Amino acid sequence: MNSAAALLAIQVKPDISIDVRGAFWHGVNFDVKRLCRAAAAEAMASVPETPGEVEISVVLADDAFVRELNKTWRNIDAPTNVLAFPCADSEESAGVGAERLLGDVIVAFQTTEREARELNLPFEHHFTHLMVHGVLHLLGYDHMDDDEAAIMEKLEVEALARLGIGNPYGEDAPDG
Image 1 (cartoon, rainbow, N blue to C red):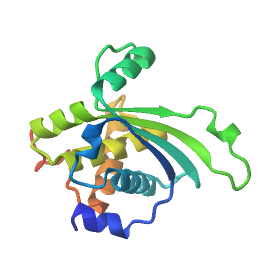
Image 2 (spheres, rainbow, N blue to C red):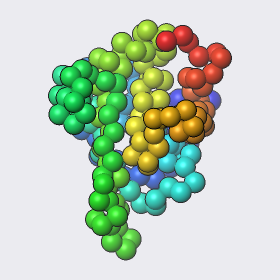
Image 3 (cartoon, rainbow, N blue to C red):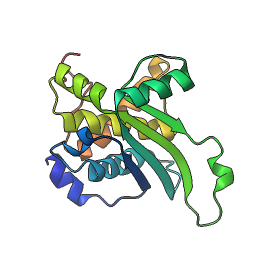
Image 4 (cartoon, rainbow, N blue to C red):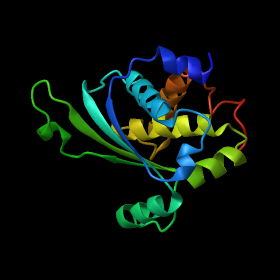
């Protein structure tokens, strides 16, 4: 199944607000907002303890915006492909039947584009992987040690497979 067909088959669970910053995101050859929603839904479907109705904020930005966030919040003065900021007090903000804010995912266009080119991947596939990765971070997954990384990678691969995208970590994955 290709990505477009997979998008049509997905029922979106999270409520996602998407802020598109910059004309470069409007120039991609796929429906970036629809793919954000599909990637987030599949990331959540990979997790057995998914927290019900949630809201996710997505910012599709440029390297300069992500670099500033990275510098401010992580003391790293460089852009990165994706940042995820879980909402620490989301339990307190949710009432009965209410959505809770899961957090923010911010993707840098230029870094994502460069990495896709270097990895010999379609931009759409690499972007989808980064969205899944970011949402898994919001759900509490990390890759700080080998065991955590293996769990997170397994969830990413499962979500991407349901979207018709191959394993970015497997033997068939491009070098990078």
